[in-house]
Image (spheres, rainbow, N blue to C red):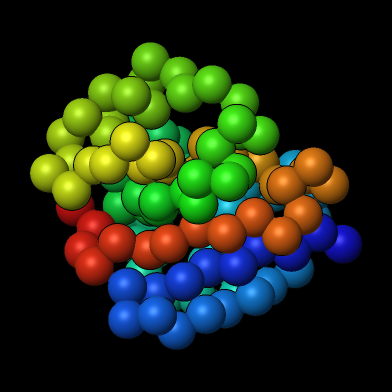
Length: 106
């Protein structure tokens, strides 16, 4: 089972396993990882599951969609490595992915 390392803004790490195909948002909320609000439940209609993907993993992700881009554009803390965790499905290729959680979700 592949794993994800979530790093809170304060540096606390949470390494959790997830099922292939589940979004990083679902994996975080199912494992009570703090810092992901997921207000829209994974519908890509808000930005409250914003994560900062470790640069080493960015090239392994599918390209960002126009909808995700639009949601991220509303976020004042957007960075070049910002993604919505609801739009990143876990796979064996992403086993061990590292994502940082921003201080605030908007």
